[in-house]
Image (cartoon, rainbow, N blue to C red; front, side):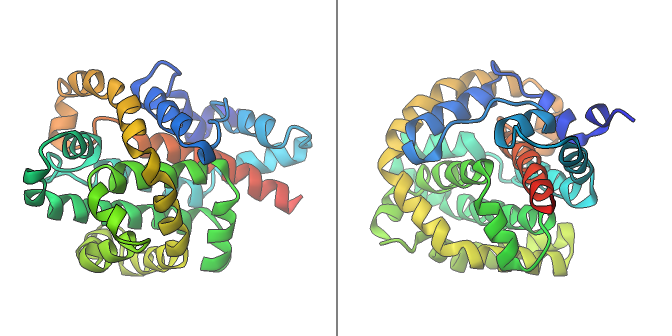
Amino acid sequence: MNLTVTSPINTTLAEYKPEDYTVRMCDALFGVVPFAGPVLPYNSVEGAIQQLYPQASPQVLQRALEIARGEGMQGALKAADMIDKADAGIAMFSGVKGAFNLFFGDRSQALETDTQQGVDAALKLLGIGYMISKMYPGTIQEKVQTFYTTPAGKHLIVYYTLIEVALPFLDNAVTASGNFVGSLMSRFGGEAANKLSAAVGGQDAAEAQGVIQTMMSWIEGALTSVLPYARTAAEKARAFVPGALSMMDKAASVVATGADALPVYRYLGARLAAESSVLLASREA
């Protein structure tokens, strides 16, 4: 059996070429934030092994591919798709387009959109928690600790804190003294949890909430760390947004689903799944 062909993670990674707007924008963002680290060059689970564990035995490679094809990783990939499409109905206010409009636009008008943007930010964070809960075995604490060790995990949190929090809520985040994400979840997390529960079930939504609660101090620290780079990152990244919006606005499927113009969570989620498959296989070995 050719596992490379049949792995949904590999199929997803193959969709993203170096010249794509999503890839180029992520490279620009992570290049501005020093502690984000470089985006490792690979487009398959096998490539991730070469980058992270080049001395891996054929048995470890085989096991990584088995994990990549497992139910947990597939659930996480579906969650990444859900995050990119979760803002249907309030798409004008959320996602990359909304974040950039708020950051560079007239802040006097932002109060009219903060509620929608806030619910969306809370929902996407819970979606990340759901991804983590599906990917890894063990207790919530063990799942979170495994997530911390993947480079793609760091990239996912850097992207989230920059685009979903720092850009639309910069003034509030700067004055919140390291407790802005917690206050955002206190205000909007209940509505977001109800939406997630309707999509994945109450038990899975509750576990996602537990994951995020466990990670909260780390997420707050990440937000504090990215805030000084918010304007530079926005200036670098917005060069890729108009072209993406122009291209995607012509797609009827985007209009119908409310999908974000740049499917970054699908991209970063597939990378996280690939790296996590390698990590879990290497630990078993």
